[in-house]
Image (cartoon, rainbow, N blue to C red; front, side, top):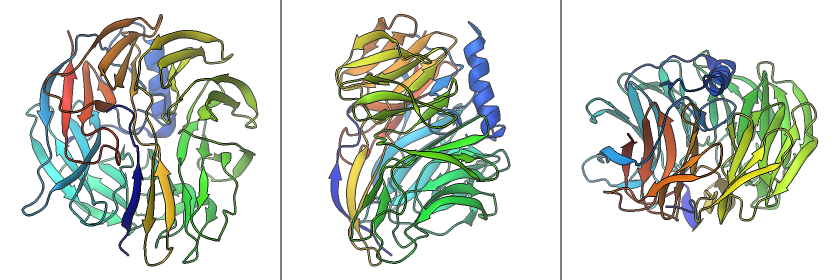
Length: 453
């Protein structure tokens, strides 16, 4: 069923054609931890899911220093008679870059599309277009030999040639995490004409292995999950929904933080909360933004370990960079001790707080429905070089992880808008240059590969 876009509110306050190895959630988390301990050694691991890894640390083993300049750019080309509706963000490895975008489906939001790009030639290797009509810009994940998209359906797209032989069918949306066996842990965030809201694991044949918090199974339920954040640490999947009702039916489950055994799906505990960001996990804690504060909750029971106010805090999960966590507010980027919450440095930067989008859709089954998701990002850490890349309304900043010193900042030559959604592989930062505000950078744009000294 077609879904009409009715209302759109701000999305961003700023502006591998190969086959990367996939070790699953725990392996990705271990790799992130190893990078923290690696000291000055620079690595080239891929950024293959939202937040880099299963724990959503937003921390890579790359090395980044300013000044940053555009090494190359790439803009998707629509098929004849079509147009590019939105350019969202990219995942990357040394042997392939995968750009997510939306093509024509007027008057609808746009098809779910992705390009496989060669970093060596900067050329498109393949394009995949689902033919669906409601691409909401959810981040994909590389799992095994496929790029797994969860946007108006879950699609397994070959990293080699962009073909897809497996799909769930339409009306699934949300975050994903590779499970090490070609499948993904995932969340669905909308009761449209699809299966309703739930969190779970699905294998490479599109068989759901387990599901939790299932609700909104009947036509007309009109339920949504505006955050849909998931993260995995220590074999536990943490899920932080912000449920909403667009009609008369109220959510069965309360907004909050939930914990499940990642493989068995067995519920472990849940606590009420007001998540206004996605989540990250580490140090025995789960980090998120709640009611204008950075909050750390214990992984054992969800109780609050510490909380610190942050004015105008954004919707990106706090970055975990060794012993500190970092979040962006409306006026500054700030660090906190990861275990105690003790404030560290705070660097004034305006426009670095990534915002969730909010929209209302209508369709034949559920009627009017309020949706949203925290897909825009502005922070990415490079652990061996001790630096943090920040995209803001005035350009790109490179901060010291140790002191917060703004070691370099500037606009990127050739960028038409404010760049956003940084991902780091080795000594390259990939960002998307698309219109600020609107629906996740609504409108055409380009991928930019930035390099430093």
